[in-house]
Amino acid sequence: MSRNFFVDNWSGVTAWENADRFCNSPANTSSGYCTKRVASKASCAQPGMASAPLYDTCRWKTQNVAVHANTFSVDRAAIGCTNSFCGRQAVLSNYATYPSWSPYQRTVVQQAITFDQNNRWYGNTYRGPWSFMAFDTARSLTAAQ
Image (cartoon, rainbow, N blue to C red):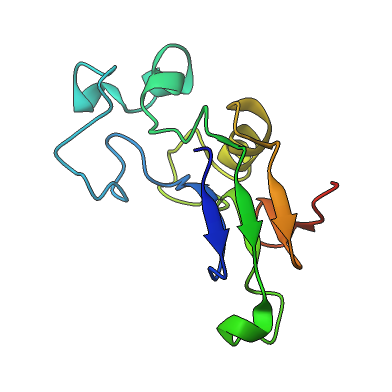
């Protein structure tokens, strides 16, 4: 995503991945479908999906997101925002808890989306009080961080 102007939007760009949603998970809202790299939904089950290649291919990933050469401008007063919940960019996931047999439990996907899946914000211009969330909603960062 590049060369856009975001002016007084509530938020900027959020890259999100649901850690509980993967092929064959009860949390998968696309219950009849898997990723294109999985031949059979049934193959995304334990014990097989705990190791390669299924560990990597059973999950829909938010990866290779490049947010660059954009201008983000926010005036909280202009949009009626009186707190820090507006003017945010984010790359994050939920803490995985479901289903119990998931190999992606706890912070596995949070770690991956934040540090290992080539999601990057760079070369943007920020005007106003922008903040960033990474990993989960409890980690608020400044533009410099």
